[in-house]
Length: 395
Image 1 (spheres, rainbow, N blue to C red):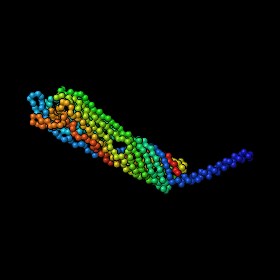
Image 2: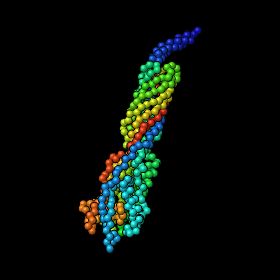
Image 3: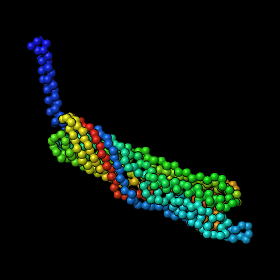
Image 4: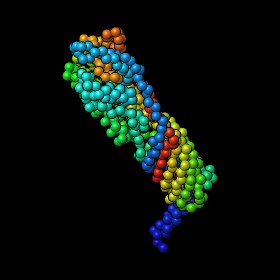
């Protein structure tokens, strides 16, 4: 054997011995490792019950008003009731408008032509969840401590990219209400040729959610096998679901400016905001299972499926802000010859006496502002099904 070949054999043998010396302790150490760290990604689907408790704002305060019909002679005093409402878009406000419109249509001497427009109340939207988030992607980290060959404990952190969106049913209902405001008030104002319409608008600004959900959980893992390349397991635990970002919301704004037959200007704005409310932190229970595939003693692949169950904390919140411009000149008011009636006024300071009947001077759109009124509260359990695949490393 040549010197060169002898030298090659010696070097190869030395390298093999060195490799065995390095790999063998590492393999033994990995087999005895007690920790695992994992990165994973996947998808999540959400289910929120549609059942819940509905609570609507009560009817507005009733007040008496009077007008003289038909002008100029002979004077006929008409005494009617109206109500202080916080918005025309919903509840008692939409009801009052439609009642007054129907009363005008049934009155042959109303001095106001019957008008077909009616307000489509926003009430169905108030009685359910505003948005929904059905599915999205997830990513996360998992730290595992091996207690015995069968038992492990884990700390998990997952972030879901689910963004709640306004439901199609709610979008359609909101648009129907927005459009009906235009046709209803256009009909009311122009039904009297002596009224002068200056402007009329109704808008809906919809905002979808921007957030996601952070799952921080602790679980107990029970291996169904304690040896082999493929290890199936079951897991159970508990944790916290934290909601981040913003929730869906919509703001409807209706406004009208016109002159009463007396020439008194009316300028009123009706603003309503609906928002989805939800507990920012919710306790959840975890059930699931999966399988690990050990590619080597040091690392492997995991397929995992988990279901998180938590209280359904979704709610629908209502804000309403009526605004009437006061102090415009000339001062005055106007009513419909109907019972119940609608009154428009730019002067609320003093009662008005007409042929011995004292009337409240205020507009019907004079109810109190509404802030954070919970119109719907969800019931039951929400479920989150997360299926993920990841790589884990033992150390």
